[in-house]
Image (tube, rainbow, N blue to C red; front, side, top):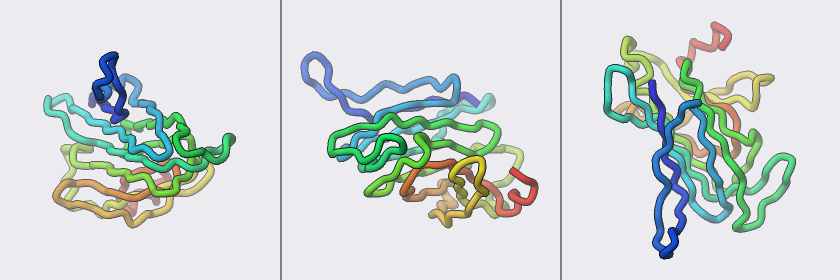
Length: 175
């Protein structure tokens, strides 16, 4: 799979006209962007499979109210924090950093699983969205909103950690 990302960080050019950031190529399946307290910022990560040239969504993350950053403390209105999104291409998993970043109004995370494995019918799987604080903690089921039509999960996250889509019985094999 080839991943690409676009970051919604409005800016201005030399004439003062607003523009949006251009799409980014995710060679390392990793993207960073600045989240600003009081301003909506988002990143969308898409992918293309080797047998399909059309771009498909994988992740959409939108933030508006990052409030508290580990090792930094409380953010004032207008302050920013650098956010990193890491994609694990072997599993439907993402790590959102800085781990422990907390929000006043939750950030919204949507993960799509439609293109995860063309050899498996995902309609027959008992999938859910899980999270864990870090590698020392076990995975916890979130009960996110699932769209069977879009083959996605959406969840309002109060803080950053690791998130993954998995089959409920997959945890018995020791992820």
